Figure 1 (spheres, rainbow, N blue to C red):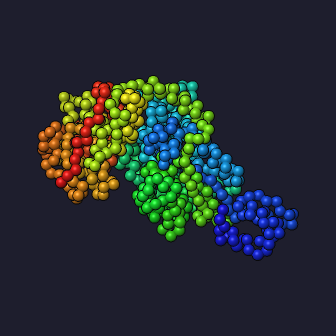
Figure 2: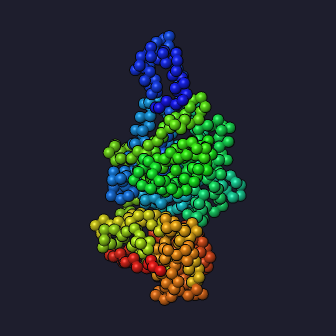
Figure 3: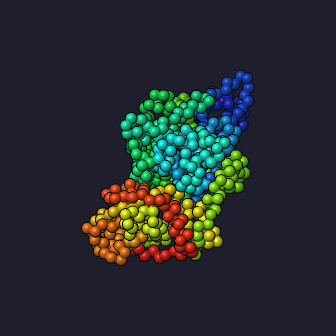
Length: 595
């Protein structure tokens, strides 16, 4: 490692002469943390620093099996990457390399380990992922927004264990499918410093964890999710909880941690940024986004930030508000990268020596031996899920139906899902049939991919993995206008990168990118079933329960009336593909751009 000022002071004068007398090779070995044998008359110097390895992941999302190497989910800059079997092996190898240098290690995560998961994990309420990560030696993790997909009570079960009485295969899920091996819960500890119960003001999980290493060095980990979590998860999943500001929460904990003897402080934060070049996973070109402002506001006593949420890979050194460099990292998503940090701790102060603390994002390549324990776990659950996953539900006439949006931000797959929701009969009540459907683009997780034209339930579930319910409701023309403007305003605007255009069926309209926020929908362009929208007319619409609660920055949905819950969105999607077999993607001509 490079010498700090204290190291150089120690090397001056008679001590240098003593080292030189012992031999240049021995001096170099000592300076780099090696072991030397000195003459009995030469005192062995006390090490000035302790090196600790920190391994970090984020946004794993239950991706136990490797994704297709041709998809963005399965490679890093063209190198096939990810898969729990390979991730486990890489973690073991990294720890072994650190141990060979006399370094201790700790493995942490920055949220979204579960939720929005492939069927292999989601079919069993993500119990397989918790089991796999526990077996990999994960010790501490912050909660993320997707940890709340099935509600905070279910998240508590993820920590403590136990089985759900959900029946065998109810809603395509089955808790504890092997009665001989009940779910034990996570061996790692979830942290939730900024998630409080409204009635008690106690945190859902512990706000921090202090790990004491063998030499007495203490490192504190503060775990948080983004404050905006309630706006991007189902309302019922976080009912009774409050989410506080990330900066204020962490800064309040600093004096508490220092009082407990922890001078080295690391934040595990499920919020992130966007580098200008997303391929530059081991650098930090032009990074923007929430993490930049959060870093600028965090107490300078916080030594490093392990971030997530944006699914980006970056390795940054950003200035804290005292003008000192601070490490800010993220390891992409789906287990494709591992961030390896070498924390260099000053033995005199117990604080991180940032000048000698370095990080590197390592690709989880697939050219290593698969971890046998993880492979056995995956094989077990693949066998259990196969009858559901491999069932052919229809065919498509193209290799894929793409979720990639055109210039109006409408996509072929968005149209398919909206059509499926509009056609679903489970939301019909009192003879009122929905005439418009709205789908949030963030809920479309992958392209719909066929196997020689065949579409399996597993492929459909990969597209829509949330098990949301469909909800029909009444909205006036005025409310629908307000809804459409919310695609470009509030948390979804006013600049283009924030726009969130809903995928639709039964409605057409034009929006003007050059118009001011709140006035982007071209007057008179909105038509329902080919007829102009009328402000005072009530229309029956359908969406999912996430949007129905105002999620993704669409409060207009909360003003709707006469809400009725139907079936699951994935069932509507699968049934539509079966009913329209084979399916041919339709043109993206429902939303247009103009003036």
